[in-house]
Image 1 (cartoon, rainbow, N blue to C red):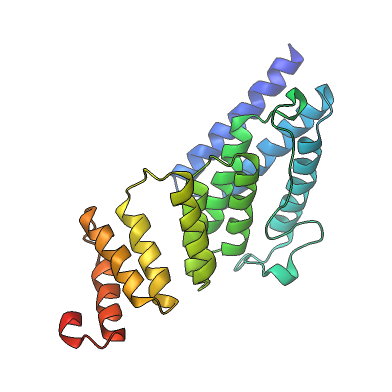
Image 2: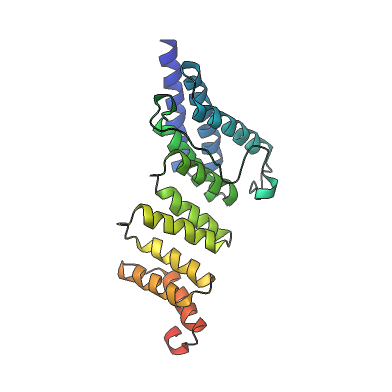
Length: 232
């Protein structure tokens, strides 16, 4: 009964964090997601030995310390200043077929949602790291590629953004999302690939995009190709 009560409290934390996320209370959501993951991982380790859970325990302990010690105004950490044992892009592999290495899906969702919260707080390095960890835990979590790409665009790292968005297309080729191709076009424009950018932006338009970014970057591409009349 005590174990069931602890598990219930942990799940309440997960849904409580979801509520704060929906209310745009991103800092509170991060704190509670961290608490949920820490408690859940510790409970799992009491019942079975798991390499991936030991990895996540160390990761979330550093995450909690980082959030507690970070400056209130800006918690965006450059890769060179990441705390020890907290890589900007977590690298970890494990046997997904091993019963001891099974991961509760709410844990994976929590890391994705923490990344989303960091993204909304303009803490892009932290968000990229959390989206990368989400993908390590579940390579099929396609939305993490998209959000990671948006973070890289916000940082002006257009090649990295393009790579992330291309991985989304490769993993989900049936995805015909206009926003995806608009952002690919933005990356290509900023990499000087004006003709390729126009192809992507026109595909986004064919898929229903009427965003100002689409028209704006198409104009910039035509201008870069010295096609002034088309730019107008």
